[in-house]
Amino acid sequence: MKFKNNLLIYLAGVVAAAFVAVSCGSSKNIAYLQDAEAGELTQIDQYTNVIKSGDLLSITVSSSKPELAVPFNLYSVKSQMSVVNDITATQSLEGYTVNMDGNIDFPTLGAIHVAGLTRSELSEMLKEMLASYMPDPIVTINFLNFNITVIGEVARPGTFKVVGDRISILEALGMAGDMTEYGDRENVIVIREIDGVREIGRLNIKSKNIFNSPFYYLQQNDVVCVDPIDARARSTSVFQMNLPAIASLGTFASSVAMLIFYITSVLK
Image 1 (cartoon, rainbow, N blue to C red):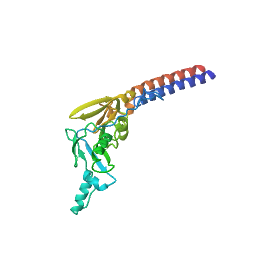
Image 2: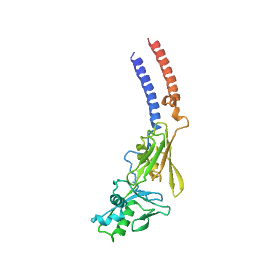
Image 3: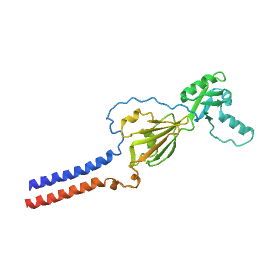
Image 4: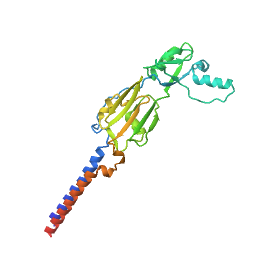
């Protein structure tokens, strides 16, 4: 009797292990950074986006003498015009468009080449140029067009506004509610346009090598496209995707049941 009980426990353990194997195989298909080791150190890239042709910049100038900063602010000029014309002032966001030559037309200072500079670099340059017009100038610059678009097999596809200088592909997927179970994690596409040239990058989210990709950090107006695992993935249920494994497991379970029945009959 003891031998029979031990055998039944062993066979039950085999069946449980088979279920765990199927479950682990399924989860491994959707896990990120599978080759990253715990405690592994990675050098953080000091990447920051640069200003490009077509960008829309918000540039605000302030000083300890505010009246001297008025001519250098699009906000101040518009508010002043509204008051003079007795029109109710509206807080509309105005910006400087970077033209195809990489320049902006700045009040009083004229054309300034800004393409290729970071926000902080442009801020420092403008401070030096404005120092002769006002004491201790403060220049605040923001991107008004830093948007990214995430489409395909994600929970919430759409276009998202980015605050700051950079956003990673993982953060972008998080903003879109993460990839669905049908998303192809080994072939995430990033579409980027720079100076009229379109470039396409492909990322394997399962690998830590994405940290070394020039597409890991997104740029203004990048489009992230998550394709389905295959053309029929959207209409395929989880049960159907694992049907071969389930069928094999069913066959194995039937064989085990028959073996148990046979051994039980013999040992009676």
